[in-house]
Image (cartoon, rainbow, N blue to C red; front, side):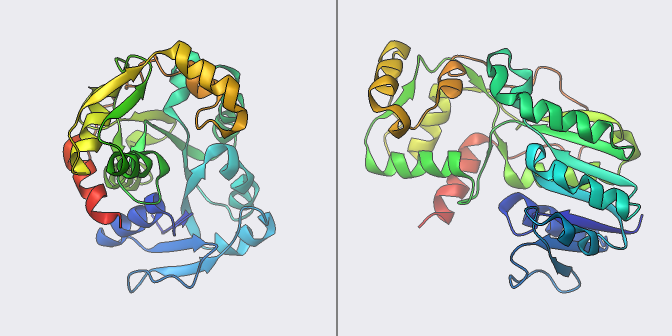
Length: 280
């Protein structure tokens, strides 16, 4: 395989994928809107922007495979540039919420973008990660740590019984670096979750402990959540689709067998500890 281009290489997951590929001695092209950022010596950096599709054609020149890190509903815009350059392989990031019945119509654009990748004529792989956390740029986990630093008791929306399987960003990057090169991953939609399935209340408690808090968690009934949402409107942090999914299990139902050195291994307690150390 020739050079692998990583679109979105300056973000948390994209930068981690670049590091994984570079560590495996793969020729890597880091494609980003922020080409001034430092990458490892030997990584070629090219400027491009999904909002300017014409900039993607020179950015992908010479690449035999491309990892599209931005969500597939955005990165689907890059497909014409891949086809124009004769790129053979593509890996796109989708969402595990497509497997959650409660996701509803909110994820239709994601499903349609996935279909476009599968019908692109390229050798494709789609990753569907669960909740990605572990880096300050990734909002969900970082927001929990910051909240836990301000309040002694964490409040979960709903009863907190829904099962989660968050995946540490570095683990996800390692799976992606494998999948873009593995013949076994071609033509597959691969769900990716972390090594543990944990209830939502346990997730909040782990964030609290990592932030130096008590780990005490209390539930907020959904009726109260919906009332607050109706009163606050767009100022409420959860939208209708998110509230509808509060009680839904969001863990991987059918695990894909991955090579031993690729399987996610960072547990929730350790992942939140690392995140807390990295946050100011």
